[in-house]
Every structure is written in structure tokens, then in C-alpha cells.
Length: 234
Image 1 (tube, helix red, strand yellow):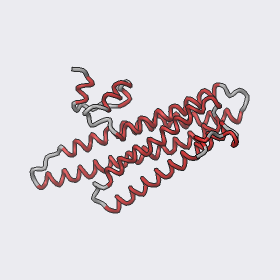
Image 2 (cartoon, rainbow, N blue to C red; image 1 turned 180 degrees about the horizontal axis):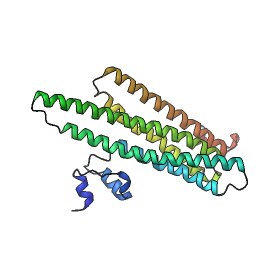
Image 3 (cartoon, rainbow, N blue to C red; image 1 turned 60 degrees about the vertical axis):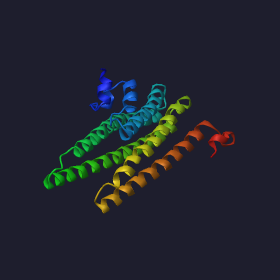
Image 4 (cartoon, rainbow, N blue to C red; image 1 turned 90 degrees about the vertical axis):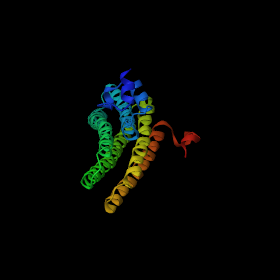
């Protein structure tokens, strides 16, 4: 029996980043509860941000004597490097959060005391499984800000990577926040539910606005206003 098949029957990976690409694909498609939507969204956003970093890194290598642009690229590259690490960690945090929820569900509930303990563990697990997607979305939104800066300073021939990475990140925000929609209604505290839902709406709004701004910057770099193709004029 392959190690992947064993994992598909319930043995979760310690980290999504220890898997090769085909294992990530197959494990995501398997019966294993993880990786799921939250971790895959953060995983995808990390790859999107890595594309942005590619554009910045190559531009920095070729920047020449433009000191101001060089300094901007160096600062941007440092910021993105830190974010790649933090986003990678959030993908794994989501794995652990869902595993914690599964463990809480498996707690005994034969007695009243056991029921109380299980309910408390379930509430804590659901809250964690709600907060981590919000944290992921917040970090991805910061990544979108870095992508917008990269669109403005990267070489023209690298903009497809940078803009493509930004598109992946914006989609990842929407995808990861679906976990909040799914989980927040399960929390017993109404005030907390309202606060978390407000945070979700604000993050999604921000990602849409930032995505539109990045698109405008991308089009401005590529085309004169009279030359913008119809597909980009919406």
C-alpha cells in the first residue's frame, strides 16, 4: 500500500510543503479530510505570491543603474520573502485547525460531563477553524498590495507572471473565506459571529478593490488608453 493511499485513509500530512506536487494533487482529490479548501487556498496564494516574487527578482537582476528603482525592488523583494514564509505557515495552520476539529468531534459524550467538555472543545476548534482563514485572507490582501507595487516596477515582459500571481491571490481570498461562511454560523456567541462576518466582508471587499486597482495598473503599463483591447476595457 502506498504512503499516499495510507494518507488518503486518514493519516494527515504533517505539512503540505513536504509533499511533492502530484501528492498534493492526489491527496486533495482523495477521501482524506486534509488538505481541504482552506489550506489549498493558502497554498495557491503562496504560489501566486511566488510568481510576483519571480517578476521582482528578475527585474532586480536587470535593473542596471536606476538607483531609485533598485531600492524599491530590494524592499519589495524582502517584504515578499517574509510573506512567502508566513503564508506557507498559514496553509499548514489550516491543516492543523481542521484536524483539531476532527479530534474534538471524536471526543466521548456518554455522560453530561463529557458532553460539556466535548461542546467546549468543539466551540474552540470551530473558532480556530474560522480565525485561520481570516488570517490567511488578511495576509493574502497584504500580498495583493505587494503585487500592485510589483506591477508598477517590474519589467514589461514579466507582467504576465506578476499579474497572473495577483489573479491567483485574489481568487484565493474568495476561496479561503468560504470556510468562514461555513463555520461562523456554528459558533454559539452571536456577537462573535457578527464580528467575524464583518471581518470576512471587509476582507473580500478589499481584495476586490485591490484586484481592480492592480488590473488598471497592469493595463496602464501595457497599453496606451487608445490601444486597450476590448477584453481589458471592462
